[in-house]
Image (spheres, rainbow, N blue to C red):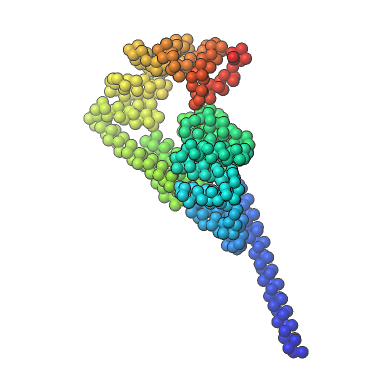
Length: 487
């Protein structure tokens, strides 16, 4: 009896222990599940830094949780901690080797570090798991692009889109490739399609804004990137793009504020730091410019491509600083030669200080190509009367179409569209294929009220030059003309 009582007591104790252990395990699973949900919610808000701690805890508590490790990798990649993301993805793929998106995410993490050899096998595997899988083809296309195999990249992007016409990233990446290649009209069409199939796709809106900025559609560029910021307020990349658009428009204060907003989200953002460095360079504040570059270079998360770009930018700033100091000292001491003044003039022009550049160059009594450069500086400085006088003198001495165009452009800025029209007509008599003469003649005719003549000039321009930024602008103008002016 005592023996059975002892056994019963052991069984009861064992049962109790099992019940307590099971209870604790259940609580751990429950807590881990809650942490994963918290991390995923932060990740979906693009608040990657907030997503990382709960996902790290969840991954540590639940070693066999694929979602914890996969989303931890995604969050780390979002925070540009790509090497750490790779380690998280390795565990996720150990748990689920055939997970399509995890293989693609691993490829993305390696590619972000500039390692195409490590990235490619994961995209290949995803493509084997599901033939013609759009995300895998898109990844392989980006590998080819990184290897400067643009034709191969384009073919792979097109296969991805043929496989899934609703896959917005492929439209975006192909559009971005065309944007970098200067094929702006093709880029815009693809990027518009990206945000058509997914209106809430932040990267597509971001790249479309950049394309609009390159085309000179300033209002559309700003409106588009602000929409991306509204959708993803925690993504610094959109603030950087807004800064680049505003800097291209000459709105330096707004660009600086936007770059600073990106820094507030990610203190080491390389493109934001590069943008602030450029603003400081334009102001002649070389210590501040170099400080921005050095802060970005000190970030352990910095990938190879951005490191190379920043290092090159730093070297250029240092060289300009030293050159500016030498030239300024020579001018201050009265020992500067005309060549020194011309060199400092070019440097000031590169900062956007065209008024000072013009005065420096004018003081050298320029001859030959320097006179054309002086006329250009006058024009960019808004000194259109001086620009017109010099371009008119140059055009009278040399019957060149480009000089006649520049004379006409100066007259147009002075508000004399009739004389501008005559200058553009004279340019076309010298060179019937001169592109800007065709374009500016249409503008002059439009301002003079001759819409039919303007439409005819614009169509002639498009027939000769159907692609590029100006072509896209002309198409938009033609679309706004009254019916009687259209063919």
